[in-house]
Length: 111
Image 1 (tube, rainbow, N blue to C red):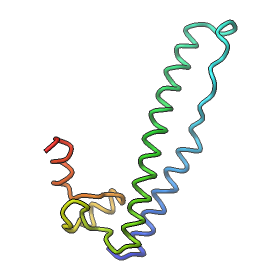
Image 2 (cartoon, rainbow, N blue to C red; image 1 turned 60 degrees about the horizontal axis):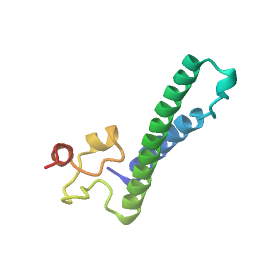
Image 3 (cartoon, rainbow, N blue to C red; image 1 turned 30 degrees about the vertical axis):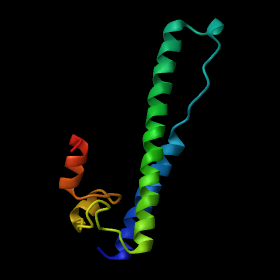
Image 4 (spheres, rainbow, N blue to C red; image 1 turned 135 degrees about the vertical axis):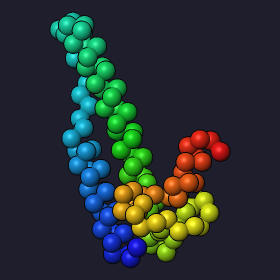
């Protein structure tokens, strides 16, 4: 994959993440004395979901930054594990891919 296409994909990914981050707003809990406990439980649930999503988006943003570093150093499109070429099709689908599909599957299995 050429550098211009990789840069474009990473910029698109960064914009997508920033858009999602801008739509996530964690609001403080209301005072229990003025809030129905069921509403409070619902609010807490959604805050936990939002917090979890926020952590996920932060990790995705860190992955974009790592991919941009690899692009700058000339190693984008190569596995950080083996140095094998990551196919363009995979990079189109997952611009921040750090490993080949097989390597990622092994990693997820713990092997």
